[in-house]
Length: 114
View 1 (cartoon, rainbow, N blue to C red):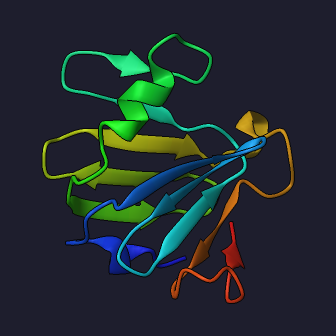
View 2: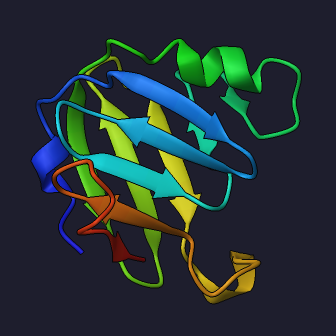
């Protein structure tokens, strides 16, 4: 799936919705049903760790340098600062048949699952 439309865009909102996460950009939106890892230059943070929510919210306002979604690989969103949001899409790492979705217009009506 091509998520490159978020490249050059600023992360405008992080939404914690029950058991999933939404990342909003100018228009596009990523919905993640599994919790991604955050890879900073000197450390990483996983869901459940004390600073996870603060760490992911600290990315609001950051600009995406590169984004990719490789089937049976990973979803990665790399920011200009070098920080990466990474979600494994490997079958053995997934707890559900769908890891997330991408909506080009941000409404969710056109969401493509991955």
